[in-house]
Structures are given as C-alpha cells and as structure tokens.
Amino acid sequence: MTIGFALDVAIAVLVAAVACWTILARASFAAVVGFVSFGLLLTLAWVRLYAIDVALTEAAIGSGLTGALLLGAAARLRTNESAAQAERPGMALSVAAALLSVTTTAALAAALLLLPSPAPTLAPAAAANAGATGLGNPVTNVLIAFRAMDTMLEKVVLLLALVGVWSLSSDRFWGGPPSPLRAANTDGPLSFLTRLLTPIGIVVGIYILWEGADNPGGAFQGGTILAAMWLLMIMSGLANAPAVRSRSLRLVLIAGPTVFLLVGLGGLWLGDAFLAYPVAYAKAVILVIEFVMTLTIAATLGLLLAGPPAQEASR
Amino acid sequence: MMSIVLNIFTVLAVTGGAFFFLAGTVGLLRFPDVLTRLHSLTKADNLGLGLILLGLLPQTAGPFAALKMIVAWLLVQLSGATVAQLIAREARRGMSQT
Image 1: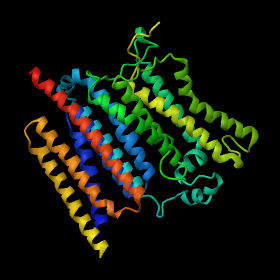
Image 2: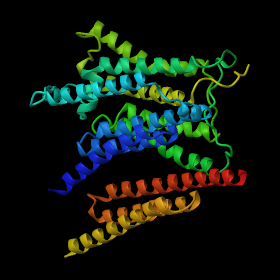
Image 3: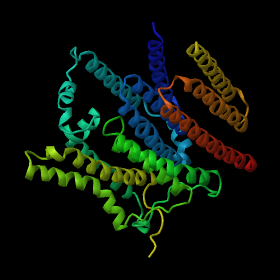
Image 4: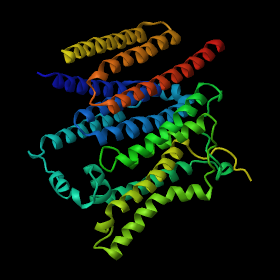
C-alpha cells in the first residue's frame, strides 16, 4: 500500500463523510459550510485523478460560487428557519422521499457497476484530432471546438438563470442596481484587502484564461475569478453595482453567446457546418470567442451573486 | 551530500508545519470562544503553511515555481488575516450587543 493509495482512500472517506454531515445538518448555515468543504475535498479528488481542469472548475464554481449563492439564500431564509425546522413531514411524505432517494442511489450504482469495461470513450478521437485547432489543452479543444454547441448553449442557460434572478425584483426597483451584501464598515480590512487583491486577481484571471489554450484553465475559471474581484469591489464600497437597465451592461451580457452564434453561422456560410471554424484561423477565432466569453461569464456570474435589483433606479 | 541535507531540511520543516496545523485544529475544536479559536486558526495558517512552503522550496523545479509558491503563501496570509479581522469584528459586535 503506497502513500498515494492511502491518500486516495482518506479523501474518498472524507468526501463521503462530509456529504453525509451536510445532509444531516439541521441548520442551513451549517449545511452550506459543509457543502463548501465537500466541494474543496472534491477538488482534491479531481486533482488526484489528474483532472486539473475539472478541479479548477469545482473549486471556482462548485464550491466557491455555488457556496456563496447558498450562503446568500441561507441568510435570506434565516427569519423563518426555526419555523421550517419545527415542521415535521407526514409519514407518507417521509416514506415517499426515502423510496425516491433509495431508487436514485440504486439506479446510479447500477449504471456505474454495469458500465462495460473498458468504458466507452471518445478520448482517443479527441487526442488524435488535437492538432486541428492549434491548442494544446485537450479539454479546451473539446469545450470550444469538438463540443462547441454544448458550450454555447451553456452560456445561454447562464443568461436565462440571470433573467430568472432578475424577475424576482419588485416593480418599484425594476431597472435599478442590485444591492449585494455590503460591509457595514467599508474603510476597514475589507477595503484594504480589495485594494491589494483586485489588481492581482485581475491578472490571475486573465492569466488563467490565456493559459487555458495549452494548460489547465480557461474562460470559465478565469471569468469566475474576475467576477469575484468585481463583487469584492462592490461589497467593499469601492465600486457601485450597475443598474440592470444599463445598455452597456446588457451588451456585455449577450456578447459571449452572440459572438459564438455569429461564428457558428459564419461556419455554415464559409465552412462545412454550423460552428465549423476556418482551419487556418482556428486558434485566432477560438481566442476571440474565449475572451468575449470570459467578459460575459464574469458579468453574468457577478450579477447572479449580486441578486435581483433592489435599489431605486436613479433618474 | 547537499541533496541529503536539503531533504532532511524539507522533512523537518514540513513536519513542523504539520504540527502547527494539528495544534491549530486542536485549538479550533477545544478553545472556548470565537476570538481564541480565530487565534489558533490563524497560527495554523501563518506558521503551518509557511513552514510547509519553506520546506518544499528546495524541492521545486526552478526559481519560478518557488516564486509561485511564495506568492501563494502571501495571498493566503493576506486573505487569512483579513477574514480573521472581519470575523473578530462581527464577534465583538455580537458580544457588545448581548
């Protein structure tokens, strides 16, 4: 038994234990803390599986962004948390929920155990065609070129999620800026951290986007870091949240999917198929898409976390 | 000869760092209130991570990899110190209210 194997077993046991703890925690705040820890442990597991791209995404989106979203939700629910905890579901509901959980778990386990060995994979095909795009990172190849359709639609889904969040605003505030949690005292440590960290964070975000061409990284991870820096500035009072009716903001929000769609249609017109890139310029086209997408992702994720418009729009 | 000395240094420093993490975790679990728990946690962050990085520096591939690790340590220092300050402020406000 090597040290690596012992580490893998320890991570697996910890992931399962923290998952159980998160489900069993009664207070929603504690459950969110458990969820974030679960995500960080899962990140370690992905690193051990040599899936650095997935690990970066899990840390940034799965643990960081989703954790922050859930924290916000837990804060909103705090006022009626005790009432919700006092409620006891009826016998029938409990049995139905248990049956559903057991069936889902059994189905997942069966699917996993019945996988043919070796499992069906397109990895050799992706590796064999890696030269077609001029990018060195096979994950970016799959995301931007081989399965570009999925990635484009993913951006549209993000936009729809933001529309869903915005639709929660009341009529009075519609068009105004969201009001994310702002620190009570903005000239303290938070402001210091923001002034020091934001320039570093912006460089790191762009670096991760740029490195994504040949190494682990990419638009989503870089965009998440940029979004975090933006939110940090808003929360520490160094920047104002934008009004959601702002034309330039909305242009940034739709820029990513739009550029993607235009390139796709261009492929239909110039090349062989929808989203077929001209081979000679593949890398340049992909870089343009990635840069625009990073901006859109940063703006969308930041606004998702900032919440629905909650201040009067200034006239 | 040199590499043996460096390896011994690495083992010693990383063990020391691991000890601080262990001590910090014990403190986090055993200390009575928020401020003392924060104290033990930040010690683990500063000294524990600092010693582990110091121990790993001789094992890096080159100066750039070493620089990356030092930058990572500085960033953790910065965020850890700030978060500790923010939590301590909230805790003190909560204490003065009750």
